[in-house]
Structures are given as C-alpha cells and as structure tokens.
Length: 319
Ligand code: 13P
Ligand code: SF4
Image (cartoon, rainbow, N blue to C red; front, side, top):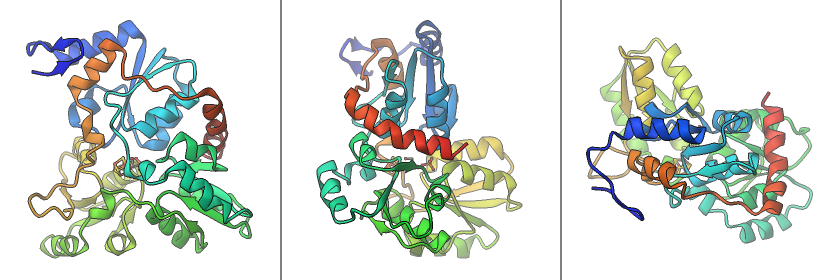
C-alpha cells in the first residue's frame, strides 16, 4: 500500500484511468523521458529525449506540465513556462551531472577562462544555465559547439565525457568541467567486450555520456532518440544497448522481431545499470502528484529569466 501525505492509496484504484481522468480535469500534459518505467512511458502524452521534451514543453498549451523525468528537466520546463504549474512526481529525482556542478564552484572555475564562451549540457541546474552562453543536449551538442567560430575558445560543462566526444567529433579541443553521469560511467568495458564475443552478429549502440573506453566498442553513438533511430534502421537482429535500459521498452515496441541486450554495469550482483534518479518516479507517485498538485517546481523569477536566454538560444539553433 502506498503512503502519501493524504493517507493510504486504495490498492483497487485503477491508476491508469485515474491519471487519465486527472489529466483531462487539470488540462495537463504528461511528458516522460525514455528512461522512465514502462507504465509511465505508456501513459504519457509525449515521450522523448531531453531536446524533444524541452521543445514540446516550450510549445504546450496545457495549463499543467507533469514531468516524468528528473529535476533539471522539470526545471527547464518551468523556466520555459513561468506561468504554468510544473509537477515532478518525486522532488528527489536529481542527476549526478547537475549535482556535480555546484554553482559557486562553477563560477570560480569560469573566472579562470574569461575569454571563453560557455556551452552547458541541459543536465545542469538553473544557476549553471544562467552562467552559460548556450545550452545543448546530446542530440544537438555537436551542432551547437560547431555554431561558434573555430577560433572561439569554449568551456563545456558539466559532462566531461559528452564534451570529450564532441571535441573528438569536431577535432576541436574544449575546456571540460570534470563532471560525469554516474550511470553511464559505470558501463564495464571488459564485460561489454565479452558480450560482443558471445554475440558476434550483434551491433552496439551507446550514449555519448559513456567514457571513450566504452564508446570505442560501439557501432553507433548518439542521444536516446538517435539510439531509437539506429535500432529501427539497423539490419542487425541483436543490438547491445549501452545506455539506461528503460529505453529498451520503446526499442522493443518499435522492433518486436529484434533482440535488445542491455550492457552490464559494474554491479557484480546484477546485470542492470538503471538510473536511480529516473527510477524514483513510479505510477503511484505520478498519480499522487497530479491528485495533490505537489511536488511543484518553483524557480526564482530573476534566475529563470537569466537561464531562459541560453535555453532559447539552443531552441533557435535546433530548428
Ligand atoms: P537524452 O535523452 O537527451 O539523450 O539524455 C539522456 C539523459 O541522460 C537524460 O538524463
Ligand atoms: Fe543524470 Fe545519468 Fe540519470 Fe541521466 S542517466 S538523469 S545523466 S544520472
């Protein structure tokens, strides 16, 4: 039985129809990331990668945005929609990249690079965004970095591995903030190579938040939407997936005749490598946050205004 501030949840409650009813009553849109649990992906109005979700958040006419994702995603939606209510099923659903770039430390880091422009991955706080010239996601990072003149020195934050992958793709060195995704940096290179040996016909798709040692074994590297496109287009019958395994739900739905094999992390007790923050959201918490209209994302208006400029720049450059 689920406990909430309002008491216990009736176990006979049909959460799918209750969420559907609330969505209509509230004129809400439910946005979900591909790493959410299957039930949440299935009930969402829109599922997507970070770029698609921020684009859809910028366009929505709903009164309430329910964000089934992590805090920085819901915060970005709020910055884009200061007059709408934005709900997140679990306020603790953070991100190691955002948490690993404290604004005061980032400000003193940037003080050493006064001539640099700052490109920040969307996986960061509103404060970090406000110190940036432009935001990017893994879908558009190469394009955004390439939009600066070749002689413009750049700082890339907070994901050193994504920054490193972009720098190698463009042959363009950048100053990298030393942050990482605690999920993607856990993929085990040795186990991945072993998996390739036991599945010689499989192709490997990986997210650029992984370190280069892992990416070098991939046939394809890209954002979650690019990973889904690769799965659709590849002739391979077996695909090894080097990102959060929540995405396999969509891969399997779109390609029922293909086999998707999650790449192992470093945990010796299981072959799983789930994002603990993404997995904090459950169908029950989604229902409760809509029923009780809390937890709600609140962003200071001056901070939101400062963070909006680099987000808007990203959306314009991504058209
Ligand atoms: P994308 O869905 O934009 O590829 O991002 C992955 C991610 O880690 C989101 O937290
Ligand atoms: Fe953050 Fe990594 Fe989880 Fe994405 S998968 S939310 S980058 S910790």
